[in-house]
Length: 112
Length: 113
Image 1 (cartoon, rainbow over the protein chains, first blue to last red):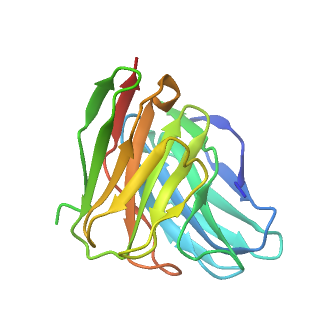
Image 2 (cartoon, rainbow over the protein chains, first blue to last red; image 1 turned 135 degrees about the horizontal axis):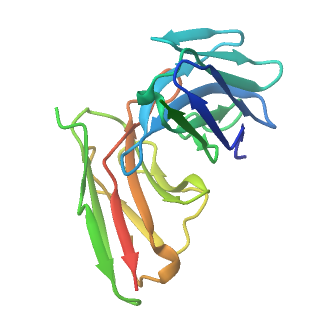
């Protein structure tokens, strides 16, 4: 079951904040976040494994609400280098632990 | 460490032609994957190999075959290419399920005329 990402696209000015959400219709085992620059491969940002877990990576952090079956990616004080498409990949409880299902992505554009 | 490598980087085929996309990883990972990426569709799983000697269908397997040649290599074959298979193909590998994540190769841009 493909997770649903929102919003589909967001445009920011440098220094502004953004939140990207990833929701699943099934119970989640893990959520993996990636960023992809145009013409390049997706690059791993972080993985969340436990309900309520929050992780940080520079000014990018994420949370995992197991009860709501969703994860959110927080980008604070955005930089030009944050531009790209963000994907969440999910593994569901009870399913195979060997493959991720990806959302359709959120296109983030950061302007000067 | 080269990570995950893919060949070729670009390919143009005519309808009906066949070809094999190659993928190799040097991270001693157990699981390997083939995805296709089309505009607005995200990454869709074609086939995967949870461990050496096993392969399974993903979300969009029709028109493709795979071979897990050994632990390092996982190839994707298009027997009779169709314009609908025009896409960017990514290979990925993962040590194991659970706490480990996937790492992607640089991709192959395939155009079928």
